Each structure stands twice: as structure tokens, then as C-alpha cells.
Amino acid sequence: MLYFDANARYRLGDERAVYELLLEHPRHCIEVASGKRADGVLLRMATACKGCVVSRDKYRDFRKRYRRLIDDPARLLGGGVRERCLRVPQLQIDVPLPASAQEAWERLAPLLVKDVPRARA
Image (cartoon, rainbow, N blue to C red; front, top):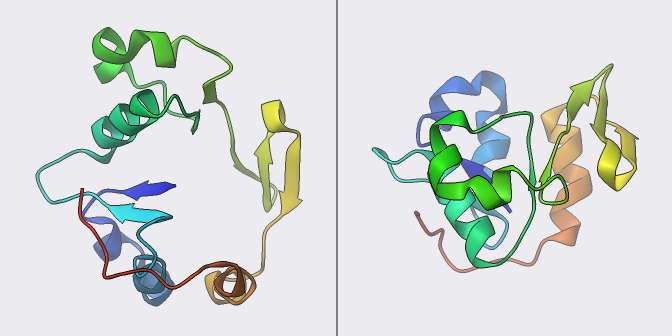
């Protein structure tokens, strides 16, 4: 699941169209309602479903409330993009990224099932 702050659409520039397409799949992509922080929603949902989070963020503002998740190296996984590759060492992921957001969408779209209209967290 991908979680985005409400301002993401305004910060993406040329990639905004692909972002809008992602939002049509709310089982996989959530835009958190304006006034709420995506970090808090993401951590709450990961805690509720005993899920993992892939992020470079240390979530210092949320440490008191979500300490068990944040301090668990099996649940808060470091990862990110470096040298045009997506890397998540704990999951042994090291894959090259497509050249553009549009190319990424063209590869991803066939794997997604069309959902009901998007939900806002």
C-alpha cells in the first residue's frame, strides 16, 4: 500500500498524471485527507494489520505511540532509490527503475485490478 500526503499532487509536476492514475486503485494507493499526516495514517494501518513499512524515515514524531513497530527491524525496513535502482536490502530488492513515471505505469497498470472510486484516509 502506498500512502501520500494530500499535497503530493501539487509537488509531483510532470508525474501528476501518473499519480492520478494510481489513485484510481485505492486498494494499493491512498491519498490521506488534507489536514492529516500520511505518516500517522500509515503507521496506524501497519500496526493494525501487523504489516511492515519500507521507508528511510525514522518517524521520530511518532516514536512514543508506535515504538513497537518503529523499533522492530523486521517491520520498519530501510529502503530507497539510489543510482536509479529501488533498494530494500532486508527484502533483497535491488531493481532498476523505469526511465519515466509513464513507463513505470505502463508496466504496473496491467497488474492492477480496477477498484471502486478512491477512498480518502
